[in-house]
Structure formats: C-alpha cells, structure tokens
Amino acid sequence: EVQLVQSGAEVRKPGESLKISCKGSGYSFTSYWIGWVRQMPGKGLEWMGIIDPADSDTRYSPSFQGQVTISADKSISTAYLQWSRLKASDTAMYYCATNVLPDQNWFDPWGQGTLVTVSS
Amino acid sequence: DIQMTQSPSSLSASVGDRVTITCRASQGISNYLAWYQQKPGKVPKILIYAASTLQSGVPSRFSGSGSGTDFTLTISSLQPEDVATYYCQKYNSAPRTFGQGTKVEIK
Image (cartoon, rainbow over all chains, first blue to last red; front, side):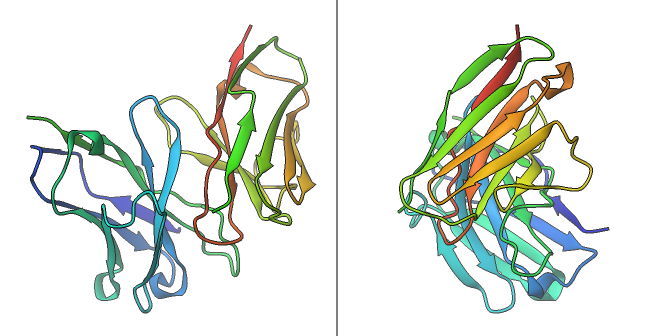
C-alpha cells in the first residue's frame, strides 16, 4: 500500500525554527515528486512546492519562495518542510502528497497532515 | 503564473438536485485539471483527473468536463454525504495552483 506518514503536531513560539517530515512507503520513493500543501484555519488549499527526491530538484510557489525550505533524504524515504523563523501566520495544517502513476501530477495519496501552531 | 478561479464560493442545494461548480484558468491548461473533495476535518480526496476521468471508487454521480480554460464539476444528484468543499487544481506545470474552493451544503 502506498502511504505517506507525517510527523506529529507541533507547537512553537514566533521566531523559532521547525522541520516537519513526511515518510513514504510502499513505492519507489525516488521515482515520484512529493509536494507540500498548506491549509490555514478555515481556509482553502495552497500549493507550496514540490521536490524530486531523486536529485532534490525543487520548485516553489512564488508565495512561499524564501519563506520555507523543502528537502528530502532519499536514504530514509523522507521529505521535509522547514522554517528558520516561524511567524504566527504559519499556523496551519500542512499536508504532503504525491502521485505514483507515471506522468500524473495530481495528488493521490496524501499524508494525514501535520498541525503547526505558532503562538507566544 | 496561471490563476484558478472557482465559482460559486459556496452553494446550498436540496438532496437530489443537480449541482455544478465552475473552475476557470487564466491561461489554457489543456486537460491538466483535477478536482478534489474535502470533508470537514478530513484529508482532501481526488475525485477527477484529466478534467473528466473519474478516480476509481468515486460514485458515478460525479462528473467533470472542459478543456483549455473552462472546466466544470457536476454532481448529478446531490446526496447528504456530498457535503464538503471542492477544489480544482491545475497540474500541467509548477506552481500547481488550487482554486479557492466551493463549499457545498444541503438546503
């Protein structure tokens, strides 16, 4: 079964750093791009960026370029989303997602989501 | 970058009604368009890809159409379990932008 399992909920203070993870299993991790999606409380889905785990080629949405860093460690089949200095506005649910069908770039499956709360 | 605009932002319809949601791309995207359903507190779920291909296991009352810039998601007979927010997404190239969502409720 193709599965993405994300790390647990996090609570941080503004200005702190954070790295959340997304572990893939049941498929060839280096063969398919993985993306990250933000959902702020009560709001819609926002596409943040994607990474090719094979060579760490990364594409960002202009809205998130310079605000977050997407990375991957293919040796442990895990993708990451990190912040160097969190802001209260980073409070959101974050999903990772991929697609394991050749040449298909819509998202299925999705991870279960990681809730990030940034509050002083 | 290409913008995706959905309409309406919300709708209320009766059980059994035909419901139509529209998604418009600011530039042509061929048929690289997906539709997702997100129920409250749940992970988004793919309904339709390639504008009109129903994902396995999705009820046949859901259908999609369109190409280029204008796309439609139709629920032929609205059911109580269809209460959710629906999103379109372009995926021809990065950024693979989502529409802002359409919230569907039962009247």
